[in-house]
Length: 315
Image (tube, rainbow, N blue to C red; front, top):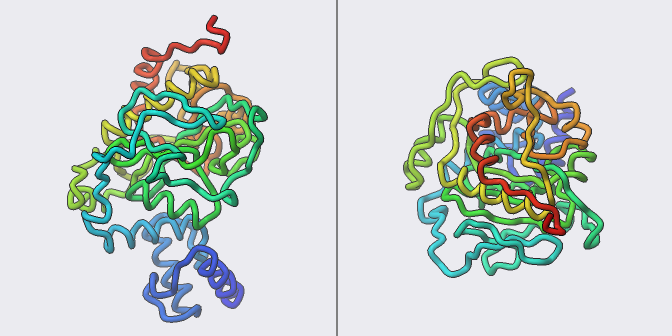
């Protein structure tokens, strides 16, 4: 019934900070519901007429593409506010990458405590890394969306390869929609608007064109053509994963299929939070396909060439 949808949308708008005008409507009425449905249809979302978390993320990204300017999202990291350390249990851990903004940096993007579960030092020992794309245009917009929604990821990698840490890895971030996985994992978002219509935004904002990918298959079906990742993002990701695996003794392994390739479907072990290694969000649920738009077979080989995993005793 429409009155229930209107009530839902009013609560959603108050929590997330959107307005009916975002959907070319003037009030919380039938017009808004129909316009939301049309928006959801264009973006391949469930047409329920309600602006839930996924619909909000899509509309926020679309508005940013229209409203922001190159000056607002320049991604200039030539200042001295970057380093090459992340923070794990309050201590510095070196990452072999020149652009890292951790939670103690002057220009940090630190998520508030209502976005994650605070854990005492030494009480958490993550054994899995979960990779996501954020469906946002920049690390700034990813940070804003996570903060609005009251969820979190430990890291987001920006268009230029800057690693932003948003939560100390000591704490449980809410990124996988699965309590067991969140408790066991570290979440890494790679910023990417995903949809090819945003290619012009990336060019206009001087990031350069992203690769356009076709015939990407996951969960047994092909997804629509989509945007890939910048080389700087992939380089930053490999450096970050290497540092995290070394620090937490996480094996450089991924779920594999019967042909020896990276599995492109749900892994029961990953979904139960028991896998030890690196997974994608699509390994956890059929409802997600991030980050199927990465060449994981090549990346897996490259990462294993750089992994030197030792336990903390040095053996």
